[in-house]
Image (cartoon, rainbow, N blue to C red):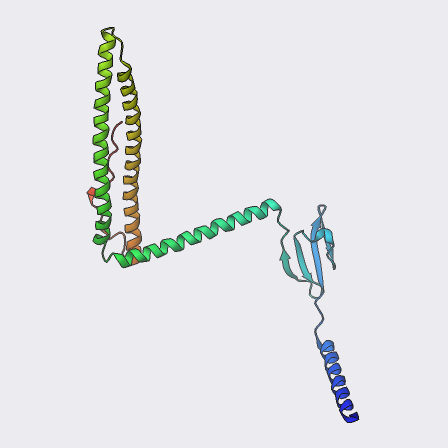
Length: 232
């Protein structure tokens, strides 16, 4: 038992000596000088007071006299909010760019040639053109119908006869429907123009993914031009 006690004591002394030696050989922390602006003047010191914690400052090595770092001032609540909003915008933009890249890759894999891509858009274009044709025809018929009702009302007024309530209501209803159909047609024409823009953009990105020089690429067929909007 005494022998075991002496062994434990020896180990403890050895460990204590090792710890002391490590503490003696550890390099001391480098002392710093802090410089900041306060009240329109430059202030420097080897300790940073609480009033200067949020200020922009320069850290200087006390040993070499060389600047070792710069610390910016603390942001205000407004600046912090603006920075967060900017970070969120950047994040969304990065997500949109990544999604667009995935779409471009899918487009290249789905269409072996430009003609295949054009045909896919051609189906959408033909469908939208037929819709525009039907809308314009319906709008023209509504206009003729409204003109006929207005002519009937005008003839009655010239004959100094009262205009029936039913005719007045029909004129009001036809006019409202004409305005509604005109707005629908304008939206369809905007969609048609956007489809042409989308095709041109898709072709450009397709060529870029395929490594095709856009200067050597064939122009878009004349039939892909946007239609002239109908007169109101």
